[in-house]
Amino acid sequence: MFETTVAPAPGAHPDGHAASFDQAKHAGAGSRPGSWLAVSFLVPPVGLGRIGDAWRRVIDRHGTLRTVLTEDPASRTAPPGTPRLIRTHDIVVTGGQWRRVGDGTTDPRSVLRELFDVACEPFGMPSYRLTVTTHDDGTRTAVIGLDHCHGDAWSLLVLVRDMLAVLGGSEDEGIDLYYGADGVELPAAVPSFADHTRDLERRPTAPDEVRNRWARIMADGDGLMPRFPLTLGDVSAPRDEVVEVIDVLDTDGVAALEAAAQEAGVRLLPLTVSVLVGVNHAMDAGTLRAVFPVHSRRGPEGDRRKWADSVGWFITNSVLECNSVDPLECDAAVSDAIGLGSHPLEPLLRPWGGMPRTKGMFALSWLDNRRLPVQVPVGAQPQHVSAWIRTDGVMAWFVLNNDGMRLRVRYPQTPEACQTVGTWSKMVTEGLRALAGYPGAEAVVGDAEDTADVPV
Image 1 (spheres, one colour):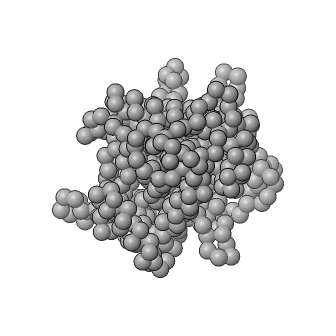
Image 2 (cartoon, rainbow, N blue to C red; image 1 turned 60 degrees about the horizontal axis):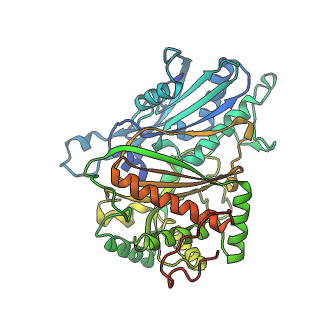
Image 3 (cartoon, rainbow, N blue to C red; image 1 turned 90 degrees about the vertical axis):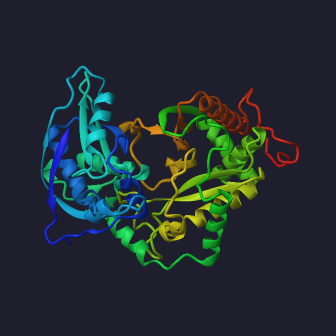
C-alpha cells in the first residue's frame, strides 16, 4: 500500500468551504465501513518506485485528491436531528511510502476491504489509498480505493486512465506531459470538485415548474423517496447485503437491442425503462418510481467538457416515474428525470430537511461505459471493487461495456427480498433478452391495455 502524508495547504482558509449537498449527507452519517468505492487494473511491468511516483503525479493533477472533509465543531453540540455541518479543506501531500499489508496468505480481497474500511472513510487524512498486488506470474494489479465523497464511477475510470498514461511515458522525458491512450495530450491539472460545488452555489434557483414537480414527487411518496414496490420483509434495521451480477446480453445482444430501440425511435435506456414498467405491471407493482442518479458534469456554454476529466462526486439524484410501456413515453420520462436533476438539490429538498432517509428505497443507475469520453485500454482489465455493507433498500445498476450488458442488484438479505428482488431481476433480464431476440426468452406481459405498445 502506498500511504501518503498530508498537511494543510499554505494560505488555505482555516474554516475551509462548505461541502456539496451529497458530500454533507454522506459524511454526516459518520465514519463507517463500506463508504468507499474502488477500481482494480493491471499495471505495466515497472518498479514500485515508479508506480508511487505516478500516483503522486496523478494526485498533483487532481485538486479533489488534495482536499479532505471535517465536521464543524459546532455540529457536535447541535440539537439531535440537526444536519451536521461538513467542511472541505485544501491540503498538500508532503510525502508517501510503500507499506506491506496482509500476511501474504489471506485472500487479497479481504485484506483490501479491511484496509479500505479503515482508511477510505469520509474524514480520512486523506481518504484514499493505492495498493499493488504482485501475482505468481510476475504481473501486478493496482487497486485505487477512495471514499465516495471524493469520487464516482466515472472518476474511477479517470484515475485508471491517468495512472496508465503516466506509467506509459518515458522516464527519460521526465513525464512532463500526460497522454491518453489515443495520444491526446491531457492538461497537467483539472478543475477540482470543490470548484464545482461553489459553481453550483452561484447558479440561479430552479424554475417554479421544477420546484412544483419535486413537491408533487415528495407528496406522492408521503415525504419519502421512492421505495421498492414489492415486499422486502423486515428492514427496520439494515441487513447484510445480497449482490447479484447477471450477464444480461452479450455484444450481439446489445446490438440487437439497440436496433430495436432505433426502430422504436428511442435509445437503449428508454427501451429498458419500458421493460421495467412492464415488469411492474406483470408483478402488480404499480407505477415505476425510482431514485435515478444523473451526472452533473455538464460544463458551461463554450466549455461543456470542463468537468469531464475531473475526479469527484459529480452525481445528483433525480426521480424517474413512468407508467407506460410505450418507448416514446418512457423516453419523455427519462428526459423529465434528467431535467429534474439539472438543478442543485439542496434548495429543492430543503422543505423535507434534505433527501429523506427512506427504508426500502429503490434506485436505478444506468452506466454506458462505451459512451463516456474517458476510455481505458481493455488490456488493463479494469474492474469495480465493491465494499460489503448492510442495507435496507434496493439498488440496481445497468452497466454496458464493449463485451455486453450486465445487471447488478444489491438488496437486503431477507427471505422476502431474496424472493421478490430475485424474481424482479429475472423478469427484467428475460424481458431484455426477448427484445434482443434471444431464443427461448419470454417477453414481459402485463395486462393487455398496458402492454399493447411493447415492441417484441
